[in-house]
Image 1: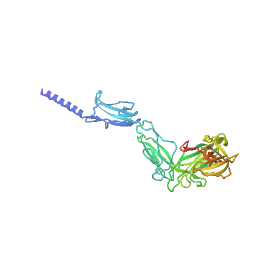
Image 2: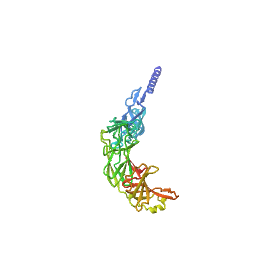
Image 3: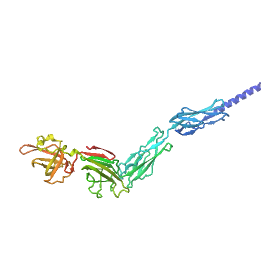
Image 4: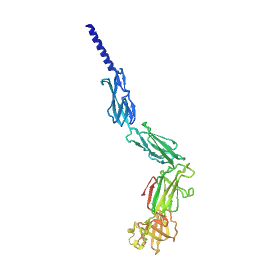
Length: 440
């Protein structure tokens, strides 16, 4: 009897020891969460500690979402962006579950392609050397595909740190240089996908994207060209010249510079000058870097297409009818007119404008005052010269004589005097964008 009791006690102790050993066993992965790129695979291996793997047992794997991650024999393959739970069971030969564990697998969408801003070099202007002036910058904005890539951060580097500075946000800043040239910006995905791209940056003293400018005979066209800010002792402006005699350059810095070349004016980092069409035709405007200063030649040719304008015809500027105009001078204000006659005298009015007294043909008593805009120089005419003026009536002058009579004098604002143009219409052209609008 005692022998039977001891046998039962020994069996119970063996069972308790086995249960205790099983309770102390740990079945788990090394980490609770893993990451894998879509299209890539990782190998998972559970670890059993505190117990021996039973003979004849096997691992059984499953995924909570096979569209995100599929698993086979511990090999997890990313299928699409998202998170799935990977579970593994250790089963005996009768498919009884001995141990079970799981982990989270997040599938990342890798960057497959980086498309730069342009397949051609992007032209940027050299930054000024003078401190306190804003630098010229350009924000790169490459296209990253697919659009749902999990990590869209890029690593930016350049092969020409002497020309440009590149931040890790993709901001390109040009540096002051008289060499100029082309820098390459390299872009690489930070997600380890290996996706790469590059963008060329051309650094030069001025920039313009305009190829052709269409003009008419009636108008003044002010061209704005981005350039470096002036540096003390250094002239970084583009020089300009134009072929043929059909257009006239105005408002440039000097009348004579390197013979036929003339540098443009600069205001707030933008060089500008005016072009006044004289007759219809096609002409070539050439911009060039300052000869002898830049270590490379930067040249840009722009076509100027000037079309004929009927605006200077008789229909738009009818010949003055002095007697008719004097019937109600105030009512004539704003009407366009042609004044033809002989110049009698020139003087400056109270506003400093040049005014000319013209005796219209038919009678020297029929005098009309024609006046130039403020700030314009004196016409190259002398008393007695014939003159033809196209313009618009301004408010007439009212004078009171010694006897108390009130007399009007007709006043015409000059738009064109001979070949001298005083066009009121000034069109501003942004050389980045070839649209223009009338300046206020």
